[in-house]
Length: 201
Image (cartoon, rainbow, N blue to C red; front, side):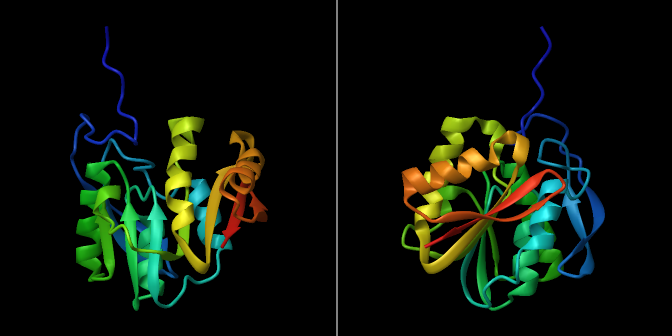
């Protein structure tokens, strides 16, 4: 019986951890990022994240910002580069992804970026903005639990932007957030088969 391949939402991937660097365009500049197998989209910027980054306005200049399900960090890095006065929390279950993001952030001198597991975010932190390409493939129950934990931590006046493939339930997720979490949600953009949902508080 062959071993199952790692999912990017595995806490400790068993696959080869050999690092490599990629040059990617983030926040209007080319940066080198660290990637490896066993994480989400190790070959570069995935289509959904690119849609999100193309569609969102600049993040708040200060306050606490969250990248939920950060992977190797394109969203968190963009937030930290564009808002050096803010504190960026990059949260993931995948410890390899977090380690890669820490090394990239160190190389770029981004002292305002914290790549951490969920339990390392202080419980009293409220977020001025949440940006996420959420891990849809963890399953509906786990996804709802994840969003139900973090979206209510938006600060008053804060908002979240989530990118979700239309064919993976973007519209039904929007309805669920409104009905179950009581947070106004609307489609802010559609591009390349993806929806960008804006959730406000």
